[in-house]
Structure formats: C-alpha cells, structure tokens
Length: 132
Image (cartoon, rainbow, N blue to C red; front, side, top):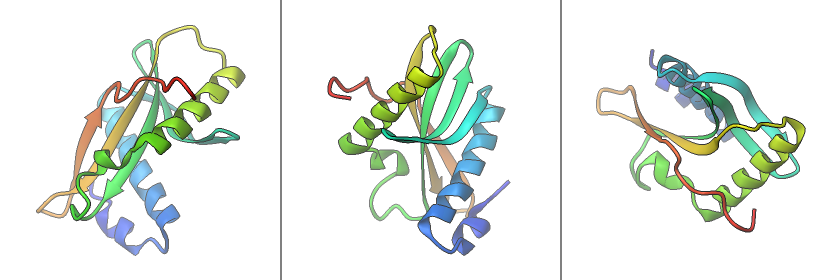
C-alpha cells in the first residue's frame, strides 16, 4: 500500500519520518522481521526500529525520500548518524540484555516513477564504530 500521499501531506519532517517508518515496518514484517520496538530514544540517540530477523537483533535506520536529488535514501546514513545509532543501540542493550547476534540494517524508501515506494534493505550495513 502506498503511503506517499500521506507522506506528502505530513506537516513537518518528523511527521514524514513517522509515515515512512510505518511503511517500513509493514514492509519488514512482510520480509519476515518481527518488529519489537519503534522510535527508541535514549541519551545515545534514537533507533527507528528494533526488530528480530530469526535469531538476530536488528537496529534498523529508516530513511525516506521522494526525490533522488541527493541520491538514494540509503546513502543518507553517514558516519555521524552511524555513531549515534551505535551509541543508542549500546544503551538499548544495557537496558535490554541480549546474548545473540546483533547488526545494523538500513532501509531506504525512495519514490518510484509510478509514485509508490521502492524499498532498499541493506542488511549488516556497517560495523559498530570503535568510538561508539
């Protein structure tokens, strides 16, 4: 189901992010992920989605774009964002101990020519930064 009209009517970037995250959650669920938490905020930053894929705990960063002016959505996760995500994930793990494997995934939502979303999932998108 397309959420682009809803995305375009959102009054600000935060509301647009919520629309994109809901579309991302629905898509990830169809791919076999089980979403555990949304918008986890702590002193380290924010994790858009915490999910499980099999026995792996995934910290998922969601990026949505309606234009390719600045490249694909997945390219918007730079080194500063990766460090913040890693810190937020580390603090999450302190509060929610986990002994299994963990990884960082990035899910990009880009507008297709037909007006719907194109989803690009990068599993294990980056290693944990040493200075997280």
